[in-house]
Amino acid sequence: MGKHMSQLNAMNRKTVKWFFLAFIGFGFSVILSIYTFGANSTTPIPYTEENDLDYRVYLKNNDYYEDEYVQDMDYISNLINYIDLNYNYSLVVDKKIDLEYSYNVISRVKIYNNEEGDLIYKKDETLVDEVRGTKQGMIQINEDLKINYPTYNNYVKEFQNQFSLFANSKLEVIMTIQVKDKEGKLNKSYSDIVEIPLGKQLVRISKIYEKPLNNGNIDVNEFDLNRAIFGGSCLMVSILIFLISIFEIIKISIIKSKSGYSVYQKTLHRIFNEYDKLVVNTLEVPEIKDQQVIRVTSFEELVDAADNLKKPILYTEVEKNSLCHFCVISEKQFYQYWLDVTGTLVEGTDHETI
Image (cartoon, rainbow, N blue to C red; front, side, top):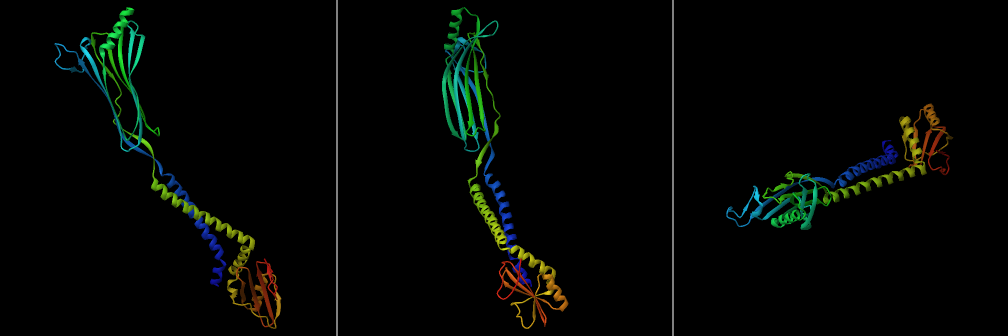
């Protein structure tokens, strides 16, 4: 009986197996999708940044100052030969990512109303045309400029004399720096300014610039090719398993629906579950001798006959998964019950179609 029940449950076990594989395939597909798409991730990349501005005032030949240049003091304007400015900027990233930068330098003469402090004149001049470039992982900008102070100072004096103005004036030398990465995660902008008074006997130079924090991070999108290939390959396999499993489940369902197999199996299950102790397997349908053939219309009638006669119910699988025969045999009667899934009569017999 155990062997027969194993055959009876074969299709259902197959369905359960494909459902399990479909569940595994779907679960792994979700996990591997997350894993694979995670190959494109955001990673913080450390960087170090410096921005510095310095100058030296070179003097004309004179009998008072022994040094060629002086720093960090007030300067006599008539002794100034030129001013040497040094703009220095650097950005170093721990990984070789593409960095774009640009910078330029202009000079700006400003003249103000001495009483009210309003701007009455401004003149810009380009000292360094815009420089653009792309570097991997490191930017280094070092720009040295020699500012001819007497030229600017004389220009302002002539302007004031021509219009009889008593005004304040100054020279601004401005370096503008812009740095960014191609993804737009990093965007830096600086204006480093040196202010130099004009038209004065004594000159005090001022520096206006931003000193950035030395360290920072750039959030960079990185693509892990090995992870993408491995995850993508496994994802394709898991999706394939899922699709095959669904196909097999649908195929089994169609077979069941077309053949009535599920109803047939359900009926056999019920019979064996309820009357297993009364049923005996046989290899062939017993021959009818001189007994009276009694065809019952339900299995329960066969059970009643078996109880009354104190005989077992003999079971024979005539056609696998489609036709079987039950009977109770006594000396005078041959009770039989056919269970059929195809609706086809077996030659020489009558049987019930489910």
